[in-house]
Length: 403
Image (cartoon, rainbow, N blue to C red; front, side, top):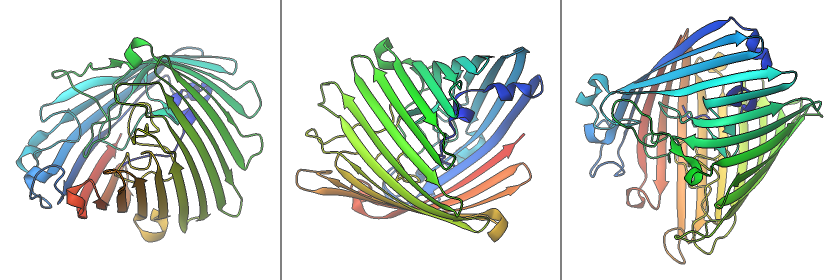
């Protein structure tokens, strides 16, 4: 399932409190994903459950963490992909190729002294403009160094250097991982031509209902970017949020793609009953007609209006987007239900003087049975640049066994 929610401390670093667990911990999951659609994105004259318009894949993830000494820990994680016997019913996979693939997507060392934690190696990241996308069957990771400090009360300071990444653009199925080399993927490419990317950020929660965060990114000789966000949650279930972001891209052969974005969100949650939210966003105009996406290493965005499945639309230049989300918990309806609707309008999106519109309406049903998580999703997509502008359906099934 695509996950957009930010969990900075959980995804970016292993904080000192995590070191109190057992000395060695082994965990993992086994996944089986299937998807099919009746649009022409994969094959002409597509139909639901047609082999050529369907994708399927199995994945095995194994991870190990250990305390090496007081305040020092290490972790590794390996992911293996296989089409197994699914090639009888699908012609496509979520990631990589029809052949079996495996690689180590995490291999890190972390140390804590006082209220400062440092982590180096291959790892997941979760910052607003550089993050690990977990919606596909495999995740992208980064070779980086991260420093976290909590000496200032109710404040977390973060500094990071990213040197390599295997992140790619999000396609119809997968492509979170850029490319695979043979049976073992080692395709971690240098970031920014070897100059790397730098990020600094601060997250403050001095007033309990309000969380404010600010980030600055520098890709030397290529681009700078910023992200400011505030989220306010009231005891009665009401919440509001605001986001402001900008990317300043230096001149490139294809033209300037600098972009800005503003987003707002209002939500209400009745505990153990339902949650609903409405969000809107607007990106800035761009003479080149193409705005930089608000993800340095991918297409999925952390803007409140991001679609459940069709990424890359809300961040195009001069785009207005609206998102409505409604969910009910598993405890109330036996299965957890979700409705996610995103509509975007991009000026000059197809040709000069024309608009590009996209509508993504997704319905999900999820159920956990012991260690097994099951999710079914049905997606209706209507976009001017897909399927000749006609609406089409996508059906997906996600099975994950956690151990």
